[in-house]
Length: 123
Image (spheres, one colour):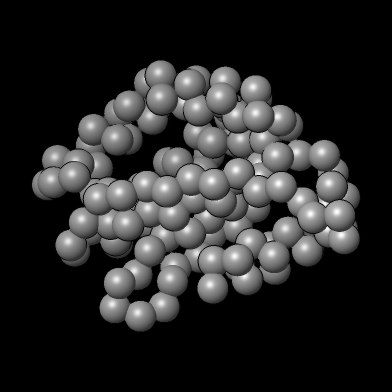
C-alpha cells in the first residue's frame, strides 16, 4: 500500500532531480486527530519554510491508521540541513510543546529515502 501511494504521488510530479522522503507516523492511542491538526495548522508551513516540499499526505485504512506522507528535498545534504533547521525552529518547538500538553502524539516515526528506478519518469 505504501509503495502504491509513493508511486501515485510521484507519477504526478514533473521530472526533477529531487530526493524524495517517505515518512510514516504511528500515533499514540486516540491522538491521530491531534497529530493531523498539528500537521495541518503548523507542520506543513514550517516544512516549506525550511526548503522541504510537501508532495502528499495520506492515512492508511483499517483500525491501525497511520499518517503517511512524501516530502522532497534538493538532495540528501539539503534534507539533513532542513531537518536540523526544522527541529531548531521556534515555531516548530512551540507547536510541538503545545500539541503534547495532553500526552505525546507520536508512538513511532519511520523514514525512507526513495531512489528512482531506471524506468521511472522521475530521476
